[in-house]
Length: 307
Image (cartoon, rainbow, N blue to C red; front, top):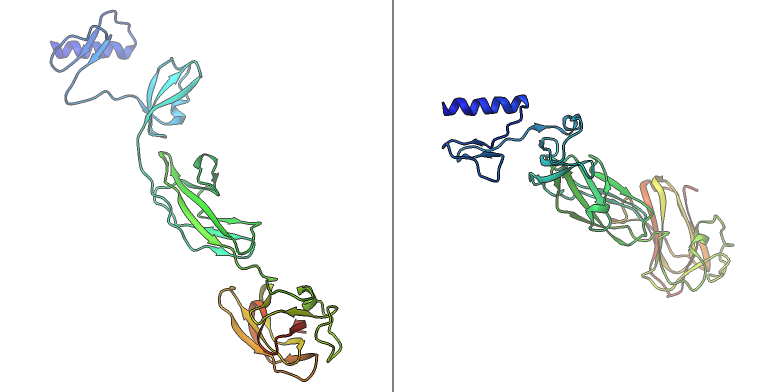
């Protein structure tokens, strides 16, 4: 009879009938607590709230204040607040998500292509230049982002989070330096500017070595000037006009890290003199001229490739 009464009560509740007495749903036949209209007591089961997606929840017409459901989209127990006309999360299930693992970044003088690896269970990724998820930019499912407008020879940091419907990971800190500053200058000039070396204007042969109209002075043998050719370029000829009795070295690189000697200029007799090498064949993105020895007074007036 007790089981029949319980079933009858449940049936009436389901049909929407109003019961004026307290209801006790128990396994031991105990009465409802005096403060409760409905008292459910069990040591082997619990109360299961209606489970539905966010879309299904949103179809509930005029939800009552404190109406409660379990949202399967967000995995949150939610209650409706008529004062704010919104569903509020009471508690959300935790489902930890791993932080992204950094990948191999690609840097140039003024930009960095940041890369990280895919995280299992991630629905997307966010990034920020400061450690603040709240202001981070959503990158969708992409695991790469290009940061532009940077300063050469500078260290940059990027914070990346993975996220899903449960929350977001701890940040992964990515660090990368931009490339060295190339028109790439590392010299203390006594006169001249780097642009003189590529303006197509040669000094008269055997002209005085220190004429600032034509030449650029290198003050010591650790100096260099280099150029970004803009893209991988096949170099087949090279011409350099420089001071006669010093040793100048032309090097090339494809990545700014590894440099290979292309040509060591032979010394000549007097002043600014032109030397040519018409038989090179290399692919390069960057070209550099430096000094490896001489009389301590170094200058060059022109560097041309594929002339």
